[in-house]
Image (tube, rainbow, N blue to C red):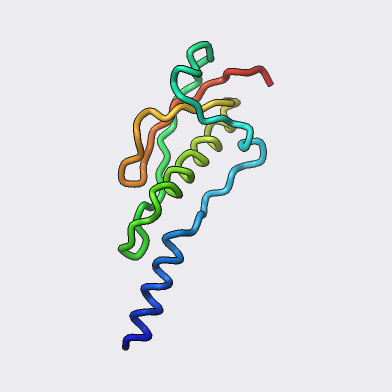
Length: 106
């Protein structure tokens, strides 16, 4: 019984630390900047991203969750020819809103 509980707990902790979001080809060039760095950029739109913040009842690493949210926003920005994203507030319950900009010409 203890072995099964230990195995289940270990599996949950390992899964909680995994990263599942992959950047699309090209999206790695999309920058995450502060709002003040995008003042002279063209605003293209917004995106709201979401990932699981808990796996099997275990809270995931907040830094990994934030990184995945930003990577999803980078993918969204790339899809509409954006090159810059700005967080429009902090992550909450595995969700975050970003503003998409074009600051450079492609």
